[in-house]
Image (cartoon, rainbow, N blue to C red; front, side, top):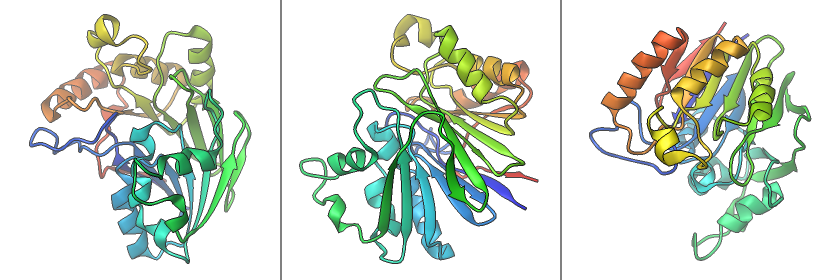
Length: 275
């Protein structure tokens, strides 16, 4: 049995590239979960482009893509995810919580059109299946693997996802603004006992109250608090602000580790294996 997590993109808002963004990377949100060859992808930020190249090399023919929401930094990579142009590829796309209620198909098709892109969804030759998910409903990802969702506090709506093989659990809790006691408690329970928790740590304690309230994101300290309350084993700080440099992230990581020993800052290319 193997349960492997790989970070393909951990940046928030917009991809970045500079000498100050090397060690943690600059691609936006994309996480791969490989459970005995069953490929489950969470979000299609710019990091999914490199993942697509890798999946073609592996000969992967089936994958599930769970979308947290339709903001551009979480879907911008899909037109450059090369497996969708392969006729022998089957891709199952799942999403649900948006306040405006567009279906999963429309989230993608409305993005893939003029004037945003020169091509439409029709150019994709893969067998693409779109599913609309209700919060809390368990979905079957094949091979005994399942996922369940929980709504976060984020403008326009967003899902956190919990993926499990019955033994291990991974929770993706990005794009969340703390402060609503009821929502925070519900999500903490949702993450309870997870082996790995990815959490939205876009802001620092100083930035959030002074300039960032209402933007739909959280802080590294809140991530540590929720991780402790949920009893998770490992916390990955995620959705790094585009302006956050490598040295700044290293400093945040060191502070977070003192608060919660299992905390670290996510890095593009990082692999976590659960035995």
